[in-house]
Image 1 (cartoon, rainbow, N blue to C red):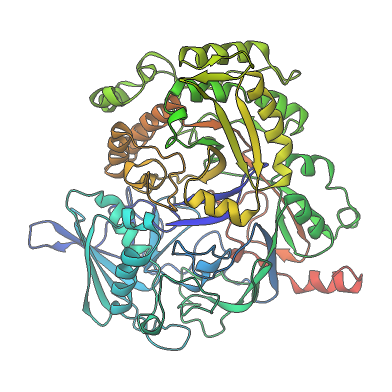
Image 2 (cartoon, rainbow, N blue to C red):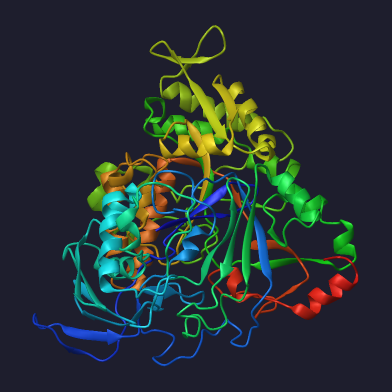
Length: 629
């Protein structure tokens, strides 16, 4: 599953993969005996490697406050625009948090990277070979209109997503052979025995469940601003297309007292205000237009968080550690275009980006250079030469991957001058690569090959990103490339990205701590030509596909780590992107009306869902008394 969230440094909204469909495997519980001789595992949840942290009968997750009060409003901002409340189809641009309407069979945690526990499902059973799973659903589960959530609704949800959902979902569901209702509250998923079985249990468990009856009179494939029929904790409060959306907590939510929800969903209202520019959004925050902000622009963080509300104590400013991989943020090439087929061209274009100068001149030295697709993860990031275990995976695919994977250490971008934008040494090296690829400088100063001029257009939808892209464009021009920055509005950018109409685009993916089959969405051949997929590079490589298979089918954390290391070093050697930057912390600011269940350190696998924070009425009253709220 893909969900969109605003993330990263001075950056774009990020695509976060694997939120509901990250990897899993065995959860040891009470075994029975399957017809094929495998033991049957029965449990309240599932885990990829080893036993679940929380035992059967647990009362709440450790990172929540079970006594958190309910009430108040959490408001934040989103970039761009929206025209739909339907997040699982290609048509339209869905509003932020519009998946909040729906429950799934299982739900994840913020302190286990690869575990899920029962939500709509009270328990699960599956054989040790994991070729199928049965979910025993809670009979008390109801949709917003009071009708029961049944196994037929689950089967409908799977089938309609395959038939009419986001094209990328069809790839994720490809190895689910069928979903069938065994009775009113029991549903079984059967998997391809040759598929990524560790992944498929989680894929089924994370399926959003829709009302079959509701869609008997509606076309699922059509975008809509009508409040959808879900079984989740929130319903629609108000919507102003392209401007704002608000959700209201349901007092009659059927699952509000389940252990997986205790201490969560504490706000009566969740509100998101939309802005076309980061700087405008910041000014709106200063003016009180919304209450919570994570800052992604280094310039604003370094120079602008000194306004009166901070000095008066009305707004709190904090820096919190981030225990997750920092994400894969960069300028991504569209490999569907012939001019980018030669990796020497891509590497040369990458060398023209002077991160060190950008960090000193634009970012106030707040960031580090990204080199890995699992940056900020000590366990998953490749380094040095391949290990013997990695070589066992890499040798069989040698014909499909760069030879430098075997002869050089994992690729790290060379450092450039922090004082001179045009680092002569880097540009000379880049020029030699372009010439070696057949792109020679003509009489007019531009590079040509077979009579065609080398052009590069960087697609951009944010004025605040101009200050980063424009210096990069200058360096590309110095190489003899006809380079340009094309800033369009958010709606046009979203449509062009869906249809792969760009040369280079900035994007960030937040990667799972337990990567799996969802990597096909970003790097797999099956998604390279699927409109709306996350494979924005258009990568189609048999060797990469093989490594993704190894990751998805890893039977231990050690096997998984080795396969991720191998994939990371291969992708880096292919130069499918120009890596940008990261920070291993969160910069946050909020009006001081909130409290939370942790002080300095959030749950290890996320800043913390804002639903585990709560509204502090005493703080709110104090601010009202000062006229500050």
